[in-house]
Length: 402
Image: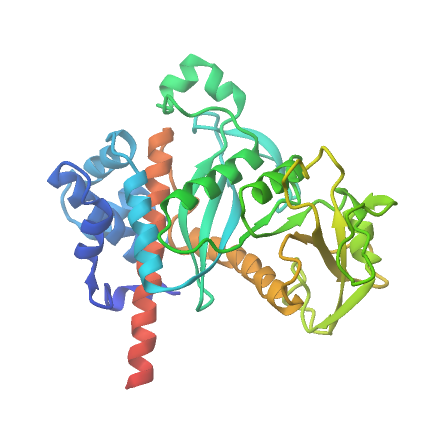
């Protein structure tokens, strides 16, 4: 989606940008707050290059004080971002059926030490330890292949929530606490489950780098979610014994090993014309063999009393190649493999959406240091992306009908 496409018409169907802003930010008590919300959205939609507050203000208005006012609105104004995210969720749901709730993870590189939540961690994309913030996003994966971000969480290292000076300086909300990444993922799922007006779709997430993946899997099952998650290849699993009818037996099979081993040695194969995911997904074109097997997780790890204990584990066979590919685990045991692979592709698409958010919508451009400011920017950026998708959709319909 190019800037040229976005600037031709800021109208999504019968919804103007002003109407869209009023729906999402009409809860703001002051007229000037709602006006600056629209200015920020318009700036994100039309400003080429870096989306700093100064550049956004200059591209939309000639007022010499606009930059200062916009900075105040984003970083200092104490407005609640949750009502806007709820309205964004409902606006998207009204326009498209939702096929999955997909979780994305973002590393925000930072130079200094003053941005809220900044810390040093290993970034697998960069392949080294970086100074960064860590964020998680929930996407609505839609029927037309689009994925729209609607909710965010920022990881807060323990030092940021226990140090009163850092906490006060970053204006961290009183209820914000240090949580492990898997707890933030669960919080995103719990939050949308209470706000959605639609039937709950499967949860799709990459948990392959989360130490608590096994526990999170158990909680998702106990809360009644269907899910498809990429898991660490070192995750301990054991074969699920089958009875004579081909259904899982009550007693677990013997012989525990790792998820990576089972994915490579699964007892069924499914030919498929593209790899599951990975950096070489665009260049590989030969048919793949998908190995699949029913497994259990060790008792006490994720099963728990009353939880879904039988899972389907599958991965891509890569003969002659070093290392294994992604390993996926699901409780949707009776779904066709084609349906599961379709959800895998939806997960891979979020990487492209995050790239678009970074290149065109200012995902990595927020320069403020406060906790509310980060959430304000992410909320407005998500809204701008959703609106731009609707504008593009309207233009494509117009071209087809011309």
